[in-house]
Structure formats: structure tokens, C-alpha cells
Length: 98
Image (cartoon, rainbow, N blue to C red):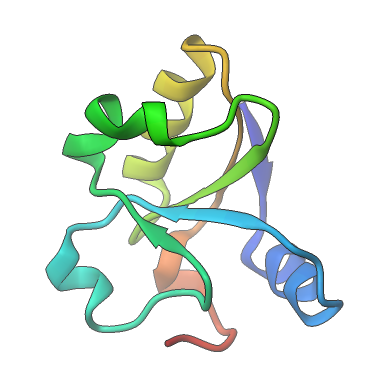
């Protein structure tokens, strides 16, 4: 499984890169702040909503600490999707939130 640190992701965003970020936390957690532009698909719904994702794109998976996004990454990878897990999750995120 590919991984990216919070600092690496923040640098890419600050450089203006167009990234596809999926936040797999619960809606109530996301309401407290998420990475700008991230799409919320709670972990429990990933299997049911993966048809909304494009297999030609690469997705960066985010959660609170990196565990749930790791599980989502492994699942999506097994289904043929290209994913990168953000290590440390939102607990380690120091960038902007919305």
C-alpha cells in the first residue's frame, strides 16, 4: 500500500496540485474540519459507493489517525483502484481545514 505523509500532502496542495482526497471518517467527525476539497465517504459506505470512483484516478485516503483509511485503501486496492493512504490522519494534519 502506498503512503503519503501529512507534510507531503500539504506541500502538494500548496503547490496547487489537483488531488482526489477521500475522507472516510464519520460525518460528525468531518463536520469538525476536513482537508479542503476532500469528499466524505464514511468507511462503512466505501464498498457501496466505490462505483462513484474512477479507476483511472489516484485517490488519497484520509481518516482520524490512519487506521480506517488504511483499511479503505486495502479494500479499494483489492478492487483495482489506485489509492494512497495518508499516514497519521487528521490528528497529524497541520494544514488548512474547511
